[in-house]
Amino acid sequence: MKKIFIILFLTNISLSFGQISTKQYQTGIFETYDNFLKNEIKLQDTITAKQNRNKLSTSFRLKNSNGKKIKDSFAIFDGNHLYFRANSIQQHFTNKINDSYKIDKAGYFRVLLSNDNYFYFESFFQCRSDASNHRIGSNYRAGIIYDISKGKFTVFYTIEDLKKFLEEALNIKVSYDDSDRLSLQMVRYAMEDLFK
Image 1 (tube, rainbow, N blue to C red):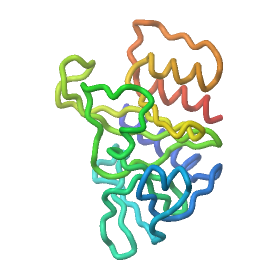
Image 2 (cartoon, rainbow, N blue to C red):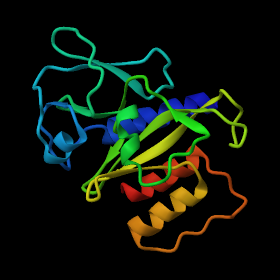
Image 3 (cartoon, rainbow, N blue to C red):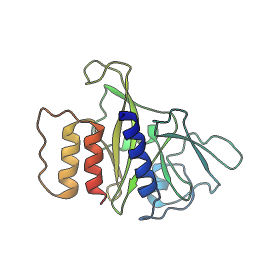
Image 4 (tube, helix red, strand yellow):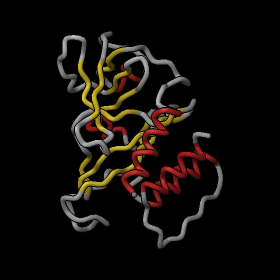
């Protein structure tokens, strides 16, 4: 039942908000972070996206018009969707990278929600330490938000990360019970309010 809810939620988000309509990017490949900030594509090409085999995965494999896999670009806009390469965004996180988790390096992650101020997407992380709330070796999905005005990404590792972001973004006091453990469902509900 939980898997069905997740699939329906992601399908709804993709259909409702998947297209980037608030800030138009050129169709093509942004090799670097600076290219992305300046909206300067380094290569204009026809891009095809294919979701990875795991249907719950948010990761996509992207290929150019020659069928060659696109590997190391910062971001790609295919004319309909914006994708970020997971391991290329780490140096642009606002919050400290949690050493207990390793970001999934396979493929690109498609923006699920967008407005004039933010892009929201999700990525898988792998637990590397028993100091976290997850078993060593287990994978979990976390929300990531990109603040367009700051040019920075925030990963919602903890309830405190989410609270701090919402207070700054919405300029309101946010309260969660200190005993609450952050869940992806909590992040998604918060994002629904932010992207109304």
